[in-house]
Image (cartoon, rainbow, N blue to C red; front, top):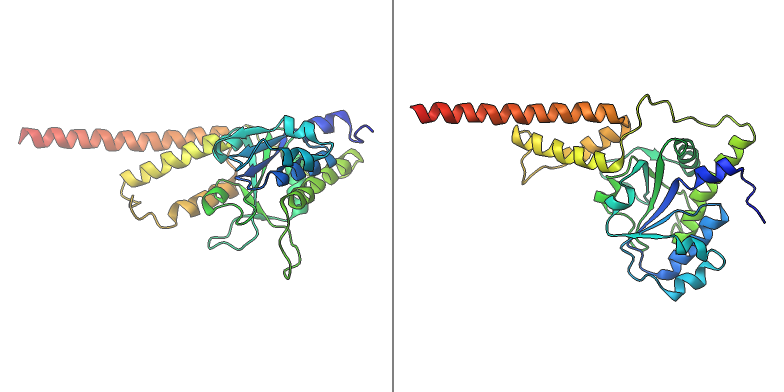
Length: 267
């Protein structure tokens, strides 16, 4: 039976990738592939899976082996999300520094809306401990599935199914004339994850040079700055301006130091 989504909706659905980080059990990868195909998704990225390819994954995938066949295996989360304009990470626990949060419904609507103009990543962590704080800080938003607190553990396939369903629901509502949320109002494309990571490295280096950050004791300053920029959602032009500001600051420091060195040498 053909997918009930319209062709343009099916095409947009493929711009939303499911990213699994360091999955321990290959059967869970197969379960995720099956959940994805149920909802009309096919873009699967695997970050350093413990065991893959594997027969257990194929067995659990059932008739979704084509999703497994198209899976892209990468060595890092940075590589998996590099070209994405929106990255949402799943989080099951409160964080010391709270991050912008989405409900599953909001996640589906936002992922569907933004996929019109750029690739989107929904990131899922390890079965036993989820995503690390460092990995979660690479995400614009976090999403929490409000399961029964007395038995809150969801297997990986079920978690993917929930978010994939919400995105499909948003797509169907848009096709039926619903008031779909729009996220394409940038006059420039939103900055991609890879460029954002380069900016954070540049920012930290500059803040260390001016003495604002101590290299051996940065505390939570960079984490809070990451959260700030996640809320802002910069576009490519804004990113270029800020990179230019940092470069100008570094050049000023460099030439000031050179002048001081020259002055000292004449004494």
